[in-house]
Image 1 (cartoon, helix red, strand yellow):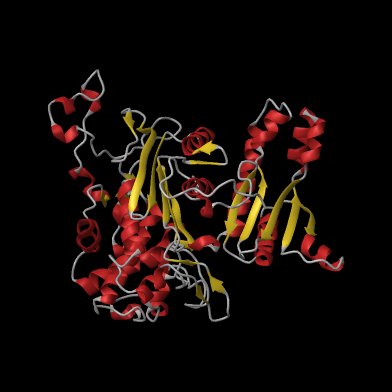
Image 2: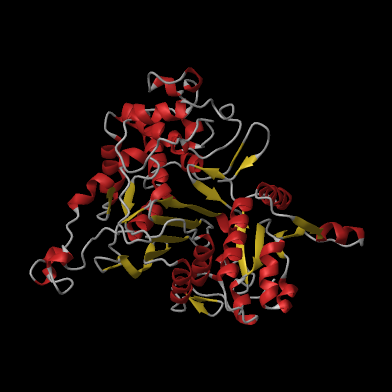
Length: 505
């Protein structure tokens, strides 16, 4: 456990963590992941003291990422859907324990008695239509077409007995919202959340045309229209993403991911909306808010650290919601501790980026109480959602699934017990691939000191579970390895193992 030199005061001008500025943390990740553009927003409630863009939101049009840039917020859209459901619940227009059959006709018989709450909790057992081979995100879909894709599979488990992420759950919720409100899902969310909060940089995919953008192909010099038209001063612009060949990634159709990943927003608007959600502005009663962002328990006693796309952790009430759509990644985290409400929003035009580790370090720069209390400069740290023993089991299962040899497992807590000592759960899992490790040792045999690979899992004094491993990127420099591609692949492997072992979905 490392000590803290000082406790930052609220509003400190020092926005660094472990001698690394936020700008440096972000730029290093952007270089590592080849992210063209990114926008960050920080909340220290009730303020949004920092909103800043990095890089290009549109490489070919040479648009800068800015506070006004609109990005697809991907699975964060689920939270808007969940809010809409709870608003109707508070208005007495639906009951969360109502069965689907009350609102939607012509569903498979096995679905009829699944409840609204089970859909919110991803506890329905209904298959995810996104997994069907015929589903495509770039075409328009009807509700009936998408339901037919999911209905080809039997329920994966008895409703309410387990949890599995499924976009079908939230598609069904949008239909319930329309039946209960008498409005389209688009109009209800727009009226009750977007317009109600005055979010000028938020909308659905079909709303993007209303945001005027300068056609930069019409001028030899970038950005000229603002000199004649005030609408283009500090403009609102939509981000763009391109594949490796430079071809623009097509925007997903709202109907293809309705209620699950169909909203575009600026990082600042996401932060504003999240402040409203944290209090009673959007959902009035605390017990109703807890239904969509608090852990809950399955009938067999297992605690589920997730609802409506949110992930819940232990340290200072941390919760986050994140994910990708084609071409883009989104992340929103919030520390709900009464001493300091801090939120971090990160949006970018690169698919498959998990900002969990970066988001944690950024939050720590704004409040030392939010730090991991370990050396993030040397370790890739990830707070898990499960007890330590369960996390170790999940890690072992993931290694087995990938056919990665498990060489050893050191249970230091058990070793301490046998020596008559006490130690909180602390386990090191040792594994690796001889073919990969041999390639590194052929370049420099002394790197054998760092092999095989290992991940530590432990429980801290507050009850949080941590997964960690040393940053492998340092090996290339320390051992003069000229080919860093193997090191990078190993780093990505370890990060993915940690996330899958530590997260419910």
